[in-house]
Image (cartoon, rainbow, N blue to C red):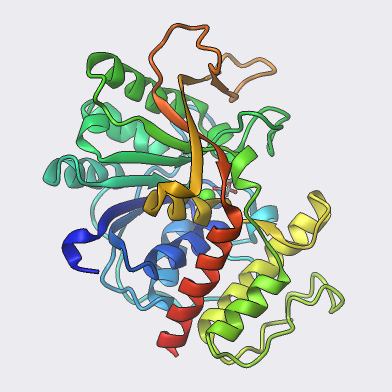
Length: 353
Ligand code: BDR
Ligand code: CA
């Protein structure tokens, strides 16, 4: 693929186990031009998410990518993090070498604004964490929705229960005011100019179809030409922090060690030994929207502080009379996505070895 055909991406992340897989997916996708990655607090503190991001990109051989840190705390609410889901520093049982490339001196929201202005209509911004950085960016540049080629978002839940409160999904739950600002910015832009590209949003009800299991990791190891790996076998001392993958390939070892934590979390809370990998599905869809079927809807966020606080509300029946600001994913081809993940990340792992 020629460099001019590639899709320029900025990823905004709270790395995070599934964010790490999303970074590996983007770094191994020939059609992606990874322009920069911005990080913020979410799954763990931004000091960890930013360092994890650089370390994962280095594992993939991508020391050329600028990584910038953004807000350490939500706009108005106290910071919540979830080490029980992603491990004490966000990487499960995996331990990555300290990255050699330094953190960017740019403030993440400023980077997003600068890059969008530099290439109007070209950039796809993919948000995989809370929307704090994006909210600050749209406050700095209200024209952002028209400057981007598209905003693609992992966030919310629309026709299924939440994973944080009964009605909230983690990324929106952490900073609902930021989410409200972001969706309102797209709403205002669509109202002013109907040609504004609508946000493409994947909520939990769709991302939870992307379930990775032991078989996928075995297939990825095989594709990488790695020696076999049985560290994900659930019969082998679950929860043992000393147990590590013995695969010969370093990318495979990382994938197995980070996912083992996530598998144990899902076994405890969701009733299956495997994991929902929300974020890499969203990157895959940003690169190939044909992986999802969408409906155009108006989306807003409840910040009223009651039982529905942090809930994402989609007006499927157009009762509000608002123009749709979102193309909401309602179905996804999870099988094709998982095949691509194995092929791309496994292929990259083979080349790295
Ligand atoms: C989202 O929350 C985070 O824990 C994951 O990284 C994902 O972005 C799913 O609710
Ligand atoms: Ca995330």
